[in-house]
Amino acid sequence: MRFQLKYLIYAAFFIAGGLTFSALTMLYPKRSPSLPAPSPVAKSEEPHNPSEDHGDHALVKEAEESAETPKEQSIAIDSKEIFQNTELLRAYVKTFGLDQSIRQLHHLTAFYGDCHQPAHLAGRFAYQVFSSKVFQSFQSECHSGGLHGAIEAYFMEHGIQNLAFDVDLICRPDLNHFFYHQCIHGIGHGLMAWSNYELLDVLKYCDRLKRSHDSCWSGAFMENVVGGLGGHHAHGKSEHPNTKYLSEDPHYPCKILEDKYKGTCYFYQTSRMMTLFQGDFSRIASACAETTESVQVYCYESMGRDVGGVHRGDPQGAIKACSTVPSSPSRIHCLTGAVQDSFWDPSGQDKALHFCKLLTEETEKGDCYNTIFARAQQVLASKNDLKRFCAKSEPPYRHRCLDLNQR
Image (cartoon, rainbow, N blue to C red; front, side, top):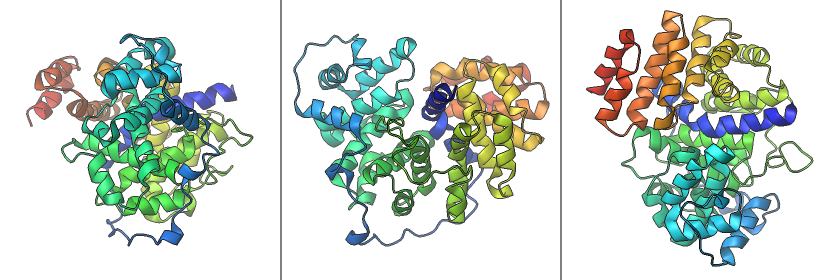
């Protein structure tokens, strides 16, 4: 049970971690004022560069060795083997590019499940082949795994001496709010991998960005809990061999941080609680209630993301799990976190609409629809797609969706 639960948590994270936080930052602005970025840290303060020592990065090392000693192969565009064969994936990326690679990996999820990990490796391979040109497109499928992998490879090569410049190169300014957040979120992931999981250092590096500091923090906190970018899912004796910033305390490390980081930290902390409490959502709800009022919204939204991951394809089960949150406002945060789990890309729109239709309490239903209407504007490609989406919502709420579509 514990083994299965752990991998459900990983899948939930990669599907909805950045997604829900993006919506939350739009709905609930940061509660502390933005601070000027600190001066660059002195060279002596920089953490050890893991490009010099890959002790914990077995899968990353395997990927790099494969790319450095290429074995030319003929590969079909509809190859299924690339999902599980590192060498064939490298050849596929070299032949067809990253965009097509991510599309094919996403297609193969019907056969093999979550594609974030192979997409991450594809991103590393693509950077090794195409260099910074790989950032000229954006692939949101596979939960932005291709982007995350390319970012990690970039930092392994360049370090962070020119961090602000590098971020402008990686994250195009013309991206909409959702995709720009995903890109900066990936920066946080990449910085954690580059720094050997020195979380407190990475938070300060994020503060040096020109904007979207909280998006960068979100990637760092997510990576701290999951440790998943390099594919190292607790292969060592320790459950989390990559980070020292986890403990048996469900509120650690959030409770030791400066106030400005705490909300973002709690937005990922319930996935740690999932492990500590063995998936008992009533205990997670109680732990969220122990936090200060200013961060509870983040904690309950985080719980909702985990609820959505565990009950994927079972909206009634997700709604029941969120009912363990006793008060109505907090329960709504859980529900909105859960509904977004299924709406990462256009393929999830019907699942999200079905989730909202199942709710019976008016306020909960209204907030559910508001959440997915906002998401639709960001992930659907055209006005016509939005109109078709709106037409499928319940009549009392349809006009609200159409009004948003006209803006």
